[in-house]
Length: 535
Ligand SMILES: O=P(O)(O)OC[C@H]1O[C@](O)(CO)[C@@H](O)[C@@H]1O
Image (cartoon, rainbow, N blue to C red):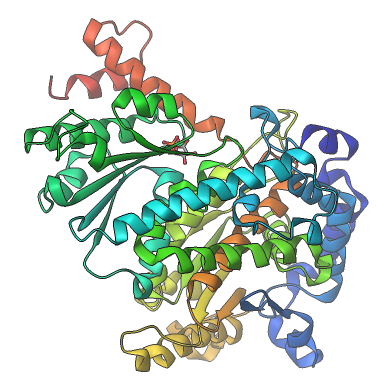
């Protein structure tokens, strides 16, 4: 929500719709029983399920009824959601604290056709679109060059947060589209074990390092990149650009900070723009490992799927707009039902890194306690997002989800069709997901003793025909826009992350203080812990 939009409107909890929602929750919402709701409303499934680009969503097993959804839609209008959304798609400075737009959606806009859904796009957006496609063409050409180079067998992406989680999640998810004969390694942790393990299984002449960092200042990435460089030089590599085994040929940079990459000694640097947030950057040059893994056609399909969801989010009426309905559900669960967490259970081995990716996307975006005016908020914001792939979760934490005291909304994500390997297992997988959602709904009644399950526990079911580059693109964009919706209603800036700076600053400070032996004003616990470390 940019400042002028926010200034124009009341805080969401001060709106008439919020008061009506609270009354409805107190009167009926708190005691809604889904089993009775299905029995009383033959059209409930139709009302609360919908097709969206590349996936079907069944929201009918959520603790919501027609009136609460109508009131939530009214809340969206009262809070100027459509204006906020349109501001983002117009390139407005929706990231007010950093003075930036948030135009990750432009990265997946085809070169033509912008006016078909964004007819009033300002000139700077159309100009930026031309830059996007120049950069995309350059990146895809380099990706094809690497794919065609049999000498390069290992691609090592060195990056963290948004420069790691997205590309790693997608490269894992699209294993069936991955080029044969090349290995993809994602090194993010500054724990030397991770990089060391990768270097132990690679050779300098057959390895391409991608130093991925929007800022090119992140400590972990810089420490890992320098250690990889030292290893490369120790293995016979050279700083000399003309050498066969040169840093210049085996280290590329993906960053907005091209000067810093040049200072590192990297010649091949792919740049991007500050209006792309790190956790929204897999569509940009940060996606190079994806493009190398799956090739031009599949990378474009990933973009197309996300673009289709962008157009849906921008043009579909709110009541049939899936990112809006999911975002409103987040408000209902967080601020009225009081559910503190949401479990994301992708019934797909390919999507095994999805929950980790969504943790950054959602919690770094909406984990805020103050609004865009820096005023403390009296209501909760981002839920804790967590999860593991199904059916693994069933044998780990689903016990608590079924019988625990806390109600934990679950998001099941599955595909009707399986992948290349043992597709015959697919029904085993998906029927288990469906059965878990059913069990959460129906529960098991009293006389079952210790087997008693209260039931009436909420879940959303997102079903793709198949996990493909296109459907994956749509799925990720769905989450991006859903996060935007709840953030806009909460009146927070979903695109900054100032809260991460203090810990980084103190880490630097502790190194300096240790070197100087100056512990003035530092708490004894911190001093004692640092003094236990190796010199
Ligand atoms: O891509 P960079 O600049 O290295 O930043 C990595 C990550 O660190 C963060 O800034 C958090 O510390 C994330 O927002 C970002 O994705």
